[in-house]
Image (tube, rainbow, N blue to C red; front, side, top):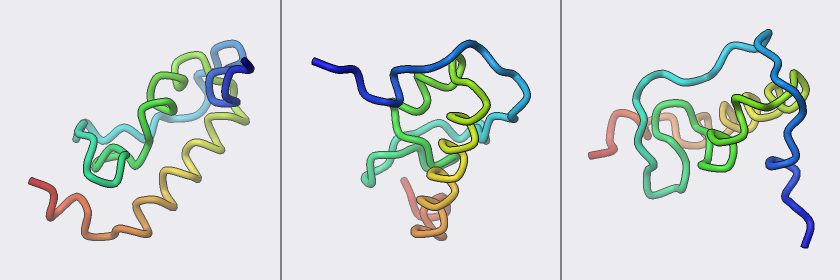
Length: 75
């Protein structure tokens, strides 16, 4: 079985700021209500290279754009 692309992280790259907002809670949509990342992306972040981090940030931002009131209405 092949590992998912998220889990095939490259060496550490600290040049992309984490999208973490310190509102760490997985909501009903399956992603963090603060940053928009899913669990696989959160776990992969510390080992991810620049390209993967940029891709994760874009996907996370897109999720938050799809649910603009998500942070305000999550219990």
